[in-house]
Structure formats: structure tokens, C-alpha cells
Image (cartoon, rainbow, N blue to C red; front, side, top):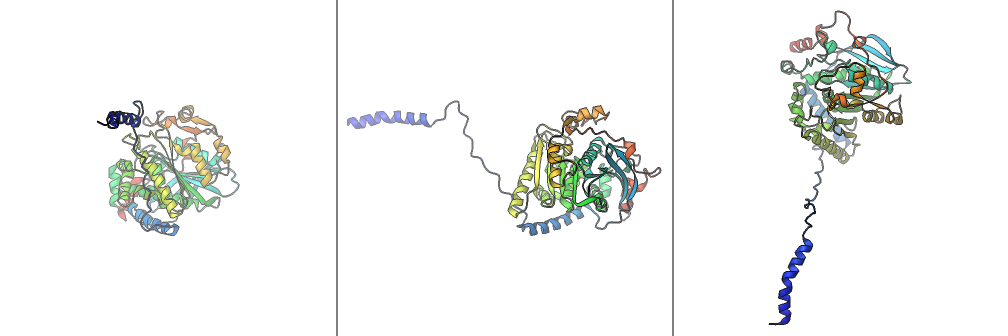
Length: 437
């Protein structure tokens, strides 16, 4: 046998072992990861290619959604009645009653600076389940926004406080299934009523010379966040929206009747990114949540928040493809639960950027001291509901500390003796009215 061939035969097994040793990963190395797959590019709705076609699609879609909610096409005179005002720590709180629709009137308060230098930007507050104008977090927000130099309108939602037949707080009277069914059978959804009343609040702001009509925003938490999302989608007069404590995700299809039913019907027509696309470019939308909020993310697996982040990403991509400014942001507090994020400093910065804060510079906002909400509530004798009064939720929030004092509920009462519980101020009276039409 040829010596060269013999040597090759001996070398081949050794070479195979050496090559295998060189190419094998070390025993301590992490397993190879699959290549990262970029998420697909978001595609705008059919036919939407530029600002003009976007606005046409938005107008057509809004019309369908307004009809689905049962929002009245015609509006009666507001017939606003001023019921007094009070001064409180350098701000003024005006008390008003306005007409929403035949047989349905709204009591509310307007917080404002005592001596505004000119027409003020304004925010309409929308409340969560059981919330009303005297609840602590909205009382806090109204005073806070007034300190920033804005006007802030806070109106009792139907079924709460002065719109409850016994004047009770925290009733959630609009939510029971029989109430939802009666409204639906009359061609109205409860969410449609809540949104329409909020639109009437914007109508009221536009009657005032001391309000800058081009700088009106909406801000809400929990159910109020849901209302704010609908206002951002349906009301072109809104220039800024803060949707706090709410998800752009199918988790909300398993919520209470007032939110579940409209969202189910909306989803028959639109995706969540398409619903959010109804806001830009006229409305700068900020979605604020805690990534440990299991009140909204009911499965507790983070899917509602991952989906909401994805909605923000897709809306930004669609806006860029259309050629409009993507004024949508999803913000999350790590390990935060169901908290009033709409009064966080990050929310105030968003307000400053998109509405203006005549009473405070951006740097002053960023330099504001903070206080734990549990400490604030304890210091002022505020009782928190058992569900929310834990560190994960409201007790764990971080509030700007301007030394605000809660305004007692009785000082914010708008109704005259004898008006409380009358049909024009109750949900029962409203249901009777719409069933007769």
C-alpha cells in the first residue's frame, strides 16, 4: 500500500474530530437563538394614502360609530344656569347646570385660575365607575389643572352624585344589565349617553370668551379613560386626550355592560389600531397605564398591555405611511396597578406640549415635588374603596405635591333644594324620556 494513502486514512478520523470540536458550541454557552423577526409593517385602512383620504375615512367611520352609540344628531340649547362660585386657595370654582338633551340636565363645576391672563386652554374630566365631581382624584385634578393655568370642567355622570335620585356617591347606577338593556332597546347605549354629555360639556366651553376654543382636551381614568378614548375618536374639537387606566385591547370586551357592549360592536367594524387612528392628527393621544394593572388586564398575563403597546406602534407606523404627525404615545409605569396616572407629571408634560400650561413652565412641571397618594389621602381623611385602597392601586400612586386641599362635597353642590332626585337629573328620568321618543 502506498505510504501517502495510508497516512491519509489515519488522518481523516482525526480531522473529523478536530473540525467537530472547532464548530461545536462550548458546553457553557447559551443555546443559539432564532433570528429576530421584525413585526409586520402596519397597513392603513383601504384607500387611506394621505391626509385628505384619512380625514374622509375618519368622517365616514365617526358617522357609523355615532349611529351605533345612539348619539343624537340634533342638539337643543344648553340653557346654562350659573349656581354660584367659590374661591379656594387662589383658584375659582364655578357651579353650573346645563341641558344635555330634552329631559336631561347636567350639574357640574368649572375650576379656573382666579385671574387668567387671557383665553385659557381647557380640559374636560371624565370619571371612572362610581366617580363624580367631588371624588378625591377628580377634585385633585381640577385644582391641579387650574394651578397650571387651565380651566377644567367636571360634570356628574348620569346616575352619580347629584344625578342620582338620592344624591349618593359611588353608585355605578348606569351599569346594571336592565339599565343597559332599556337604553339599547330605545336605540341608545349607555356609553353613547356618557360621551354625548361630554360633548355637551365641550359645547358649553365654546360658549365662553375666556376659553381658547382651539385648545380643548379630555382626560379620564378607568371608565373615564374609556370615555376619553371615544371622545378622541369621535370629537374633532378635542386637541389632546389622556386615556388613563384603560386598554386598547379585546380584554375590554369582557368588562362591564357600559363598556363591553359598545366595544363589541365597534370591533365588528374596526381593529383597535383603526379605532385609535381616529384621533391623529387632530388629537394628541396619550395612553397611560400600569403594567401590573389586573383590574383591566383581567387575565393578569400582560396581554392587554402588550396589545395596547402594539396599537401605539401600529398607529405610529400608519401615520408615517400616510404622511401625518404620529401624535400617539403609550406610557407605562413599571409594577403600577390601577392608579390615577392622568395627574402624574408625565401627563402634565403632555398637557403642556399639546394644550399649553400658562401658569407653569415645562421645567417647573418637571421640578414639582411629589407625594404618595396614600399619604395624601390619609392626611386629609379620605377613605379609599377596599378594592383600590392598596399599594398596588390608588394607594401607591405618585402625585404632584402643590399642597392641594380637598374641597368638601357640600361646597360643590349645584342643585337647588327640591331638584335632587327629579327626573331631569336622574338616569331613571332619562330612560323614560328616550323610551317615549
